[in-house]
Image (cartoon, rainbow, N blue to C red; front, side):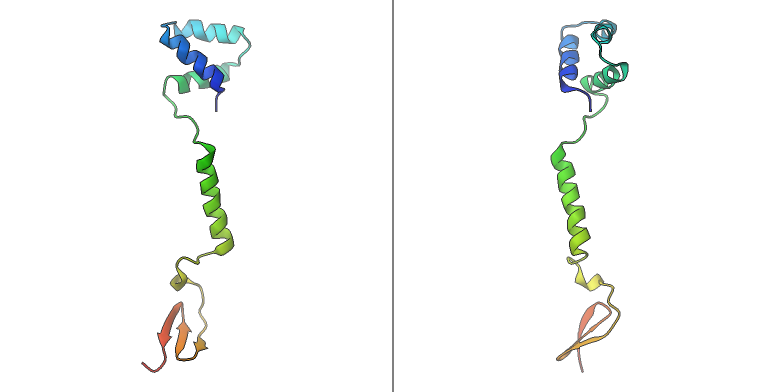
Length: 102
């Protein structure tokens, strides 16, 4: 993600109708790297969307960790259980509870 100060400077300079080449040369003379300047121009001109906010990444990782630690608890009928387990009048067979003798 480019430096926001650099992007703001480029946006302000473009709003003042300065030439792109003039802005580019002044930033390079000020010590900015050419890759940083090019990336900042892309964002300032709207050609590249800025990186998503950290909250999006946080929510994504929360979902991954939930699934990792709790597994497939939202859909227990899709469990990988293949054994028959008897419980009073019900039998758990291949992921489904079935009544015995029905």
